[in-house]
Image 1 (cartoon, rainbow, N blue to C red):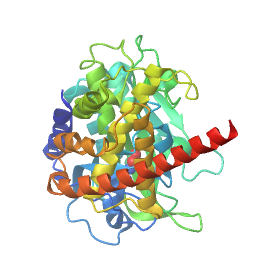
Image 2: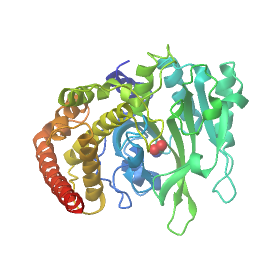
Image 3: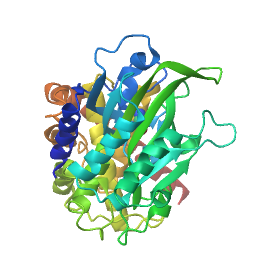
Length: 408
Ligand code: GLY
């Protein structure tokens, strides 16, 4: 399946389950305690809290998210691994006081195994089991649904179901707001399929692909978890992860290659542009030691950083968030500067980062038309930021060389 087919089949599946397909919200968050929209559920917070009635009982979408500041911040990992992004699409489905755990988990299973053909025995589920001082109780209901699903597949629930405390299995958008226990699906991508013990071990060989959150509480500023008036479902699936897994395994036929989101075709035109500008090709290497990269590892880190950061900057600017000196604007400036610093490692010419807007628009413009509409503005803003930072870097370098010459 191509990336576009993965996205479309997710939406089609939930349309067939009577979900309203809605537009991605802007990356400019509607909640005041967020830097960026960081999850598909952000735009639905008033429905979860009961502040406004939901216009539909069920919804699904693909949501642009940025996790580069605040509670969910992946910036420093981007490039050094193959599965974190600053900007990514989150596929999600929601129930507003309608269906709950049974339907949510059974539909997740149906889409993953029956529609997409993921091997059942490679899928592991996690269930909330609170540690000392954690809110709520063991999620017996989710456990029972998973146990029935695995038994029906002839699999042993004890081997396929894992437990997590508040850190891994209780989802919160930020420090406050709607939240609840969650149940994740992880896929074992190890060559021999014996990687279940790697669940939540921080490796791409066994990785979370879908999170089903059961919204039951409102976390308040004084640290309480107040039960919500109704119970809701909020799910999130990493689109690039799923598309990357499908590409890497050739549709779940080949588990010998190292998994990487960047194998998804949604990154290919951006990589092609970086190759054209640098004369180098992406080699799919992974750093052995982050602090001591080989030239090949550094080249591939740079490819990943540039592709990711070009997508983040383009989407944020299209949504009216500009690089600047404070708050979310400063986070964007930092992402852009990180990209330029990494780009220099490939000897890319000044202005290279602006050139990456075109392949971002090519790959994402069909899904997020604001990229097409605001392409000129995006290029103008990036060009001006890029040239200002290039001048600063060059001045710094000249000064450094003068000092070295004086000392020598
Ligand atoms: N809101 C669900 C998630 O981000 O995982």
